[in-house]
Image (cartoon, rainbow, N blue to C red; front, side, top):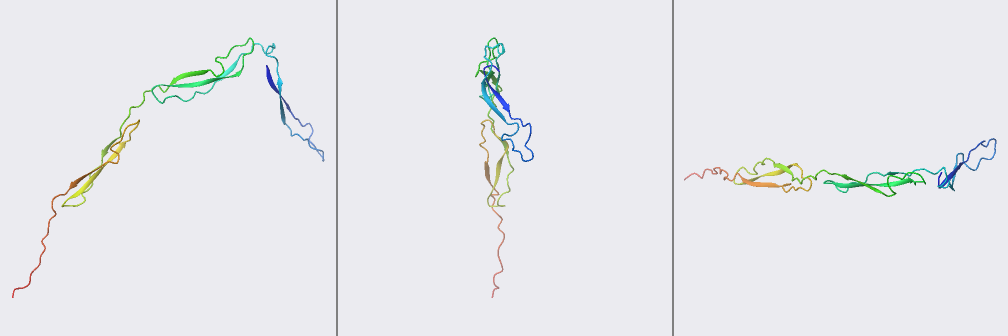
Length: 174
């Protein structure tokens, strides 16, 4: 390892306790870790090691339409050693690309039609009938729907109702 590193050791049980013997205080395969100094970066073992790193995932686009920008950031995972090659970008370097270049949808108002007229509320002497606006395609991209829940009412059967004859026989003359 070049530069600072770490060293590990593992506890290995060669003989488990048997017939009442005292068990090991450390469980089998337990690991311990210590920091350590590796080879100096100027060591022949380290010379010529190139920088390593990678760009992260692309972030979100800055706009949903009409062209936005998306970024990703470079992270170095191993620094360049003397004589080694450089990374394609510096730590924290930002790569950008265009995104969502399609045009924004135009606002569209809702579409619909009037339902059929209802039956007149009275057969004569004036009644009303109504119809309602039915949305068949909802508005989108900021469009309006002023007709939603609209209702029209008109008068109907305004002719007078027929009046039947009412009467009866009067008393007999004397």
